[in-house]
Image (cartoon, rainbow, N blue to C red; front, side, top):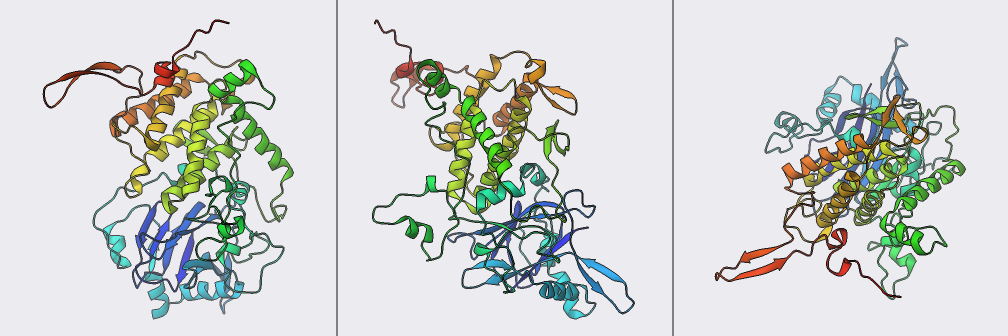
Length: 502
């Protein structure tokens, strides 16, 4: 059973996006049909560029209830039979230029009835629903009078890009405004929407909204402008309070335990394994003390955890993947950058990959986490060019910026990985479906990442390259040059060891 999204009052030529697909709306566009179960992200913007984008995360349950209870609006006819119509309705708000959801049961039932009518109005509404796809195809575009200039390959990566999301994670990151009861208004401001649970929304096919905008930011990434108070900074440019994001507390400037000195502090700076373990352990302690609003309701079924196996992310009720909170936040941040161009999420994404790719000591004991991380990273890199201009410079000559940061991290991680051998001790070994996951699995996944980067971006992650040589200039003069790149990893130049006589 699938779900339909109906959008009311959307202006023509508004940018609309669902998951990995975005397009400009036509006068005949009325929504999206056939939303499959799972996590989805709906976002809009008044224009294609130069405007703030607003997005909403929501979870659609499966009909069988294996991933949560599906709640539907029912319509009874004169013969006392009933039909189920799963519908999600959004209203465009001109004042804020964003979509606000209709949560009133009567309004949802009205639109459900209208969608099932056999008259001209019902037919027009059904024709205006864009079939859920993750590509733009000419035949589909013609049904809603949108323009598609070329055929694109269908993408099936969305489930992989959202495999580690959870209600708890999104609620922590987005900080929704909680409320014990629904307000009386039919349309709610999306920025003040409470956490909506199954007990509160008897007509809704999902359990909660979690919202983000382009300007949503974490306190650590907010610019400190002299003369501007923290309250004015939160209120933003347009006088309404911006969403404040709550990320994992990753501090790359201090990756050792408090009170560490000498050798322990030096090792903590070079190998951030302690910091990664501390962040994950702290998140688990916080989760055990944290109870999301109304999560004890009997109508809410827990979403099964997901582990990595081979090339697929599959449901597993046996155990939770260690470090899932890190992978989930990595997914939220990456998709916010891809769809909303959110700066703060991009900064957190860089902090996450820097932390993980410089944690070497725990690779053997947490191999399944690193296999899942590399699989997710590869999938994300494959979609970096989905955004216009790409997420960062990826050419082989990129000497600075995010592309160079990622390349240096991967070179260092690959070098450390090659120096490791064997599996972890049996008592510390991670397993997936009774299959031991060790260093060889991590190395194999790293080889897949390296192969893709070599073929697509022409990145050479090996440490076998010319560091010093002679080049010929345009006028025929020959000069000797030395590459300063990777001096830290090679312990050359200013990073070379120095013997100190005491």
